[in-house]
Amino acid sequence: MLSRFPWRPALSELIGGRRGGVRGNPSRSPLRARAQSLHTTLSESQTYVHEAKKSRFVAVASPVSSAEEAMEFVRDLGDSQASHNCFAYKAGPAQRCSDDGEPSGSAGIPILSAIEQESLDYVVCLVIRYYGGTKLGKGGLARAYGAAARECLKAAERIQVRPKARCEATIGFDDIGAVFGMLDSRSSGEVTRCQEDRFVDEGVVVTVEVDEEVERELAGDLKRATSGRVVLRRLENNEDDGR
Image 1 (cartoon, rainbow, N blue to C red):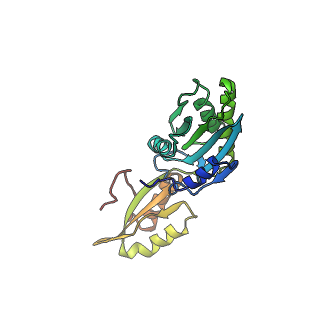
Image 2: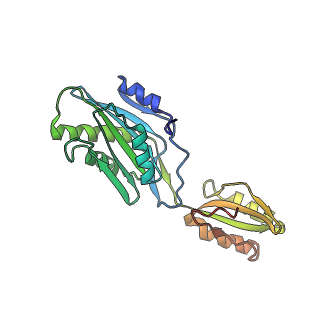
Image 3: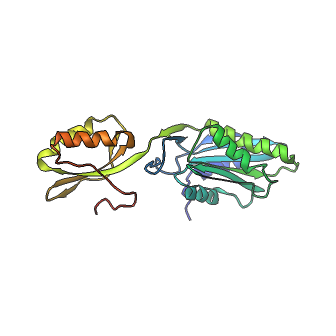
């Protein structure tokens, strides 16, 4: 089965002996923010290795869109040959951490704390430990897991994700020029045409993703420009875009 996280070779290189961090390819396309609030997350995956008394702590962090995706990441990237696969994620109101057999509170909580201290959301961080023969004690483990996660997150590039609304409008043929000109005049990122237009008897159906903060303004502009003929309608998350 092919991994959904194609930068695993970089992770293998780190495990094999390279210290420091490696930025990987994004694990998926940019996050869709329809069901999310304004937040800061990672723009792509990041790995980092921390060493403490010959134990290697390989931290891997990635943006995710949900708690389910975070757990898929942990299952896919966890190493069954490692001593421990400890993790934490924060995805809006959902958060979770795991010590995976380490003393209670010595791994998962420090990783989650690193995510919170970096003011990140919709992020998962997995720290894989390879035991080096020397016990670190609970305090030493907490410092090591926390340091691995923190340095990994600090090294990663970040983006601010704005909540989006997916909307559609049916545009009569006489209004196409005015409406398309209005959509194209919006600043980059505010309005995005997200699929091919559909032609119907009445004209053309356009589907767009709109920053929620400008959705009402855009709807008003479209109505005024077309004397009320074009109405912007928000689609439900699972709606099939009229197909």
